[in-house]
Amino acid sequence: KQEVTQIPAALSVPEGENLVLNCSFTDSAIYNLQWFRQDPGKGLTSLLLIQSSQREQTSGRLNASLDKSSGRSTLYIAASQPGDSATYLCAVRAGGSQGNLIFGKGTKLSVKP
Amino acid sequence: EPEVTQTPSHQVTQMGQEVILRCVPISNHLYFYWYRQILGQKVEFLVSFYNNEISEKSEIFDDQFSVERPDGSNFTLKIRSTKLEDSAMYFCASSSSSGGALFFGEGSRLTVL
Image (cartoon, rainbow over all chains, first blue to last red; front, side):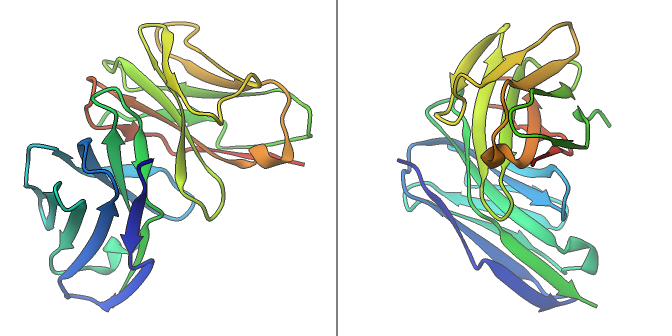
């Protein structure tokens, strides 16, 4: 059974720092992996989608990498800002293109001014 | 920018009552989903829907749950007889293609008393 783990559960950094959030999954047979952002009491905002054949995806200050064989993905945030404060969720799509997303519990990021 | 919209944003109901949560997916999307998040826990898959039928459902999605696409725009989740443990944030999501990125709504918070 696929399990997704995100470490650390919480992270506090000063503004301007570069940071890395980690996601690991137990079964490497994934179709793709998606990173989301969730603000308190709000919905999930899609940040990046990486297909299983890809190694990384970039969007602005965000860069997500995928190492399928080792069951790991990282989300790199450059030059962090207080507005980046949120919970970041990693989700893998297992069971092929029509499989459902399996989520980690998230990393709660706080960027201090 | 197109978005998934959900109503109501918050519903309080008595145990045993029926609840209908409504969603309007992004207009050109074909794949629809319901997920839920119990407070402090992971986001969990409930059901996926394509071509007017359920594609996949989790073990959470028992006989008390049903989904419907009554017209060309709405996608609903019905809980026939709510239980205390159904209290959660329910998220609707849609995708334009099989295996594509999922886009989530802001959620409907259900509180069962």
